[in-house]
Image (cartoon, rainbow over all chains, first blue to last red; front, side, top):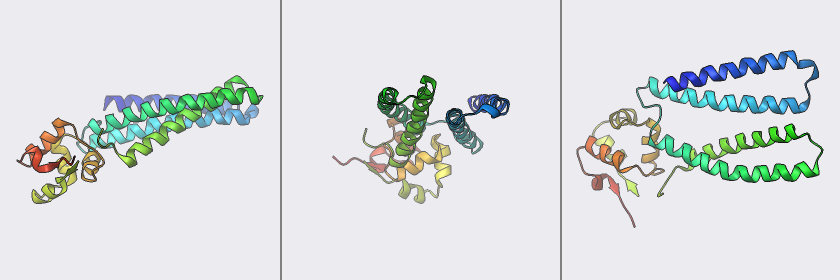
Length: 132
Length: 64
């Protein structure tokens, strides 16, 4: 329960900071800045989603985490880490072929990691974990 | 591995929510178990069997 509340507070702080940044720099925003905003929204979105899931479980009198949710998270982390290595390889390849600034490439890599994590989580939630 | 959790749950007139609370897991875990999408730990298998007043072998069917 405490963990979920901390996640919500952190998410709110990040959103407020992002909002301040967005409104103070709204005149000089480039399309690459929008990618940065996309990453922030995606990461905060994950945190809020998992926080809500945990809170609703606690409200129903169930544990916030159990052996299945921990196993899914573990498998998701392992698979998404493995795939992320290839994402970064792709980013390195494009860094030679394009003229993007390094921080834009790093932002693209992070966005890729976040998307891969979400897809892996969905994959294990639909497929389940059998005979392992 | 197959299981007869749904059958035993109906026999004991328990909902997925009630069974989940009795064995201290989330309802999703019971859904996954009934769909054979998850093989439980030995502890969870034992807790489920104990809730239904039977043995693990009666509920979980191991096919080689």
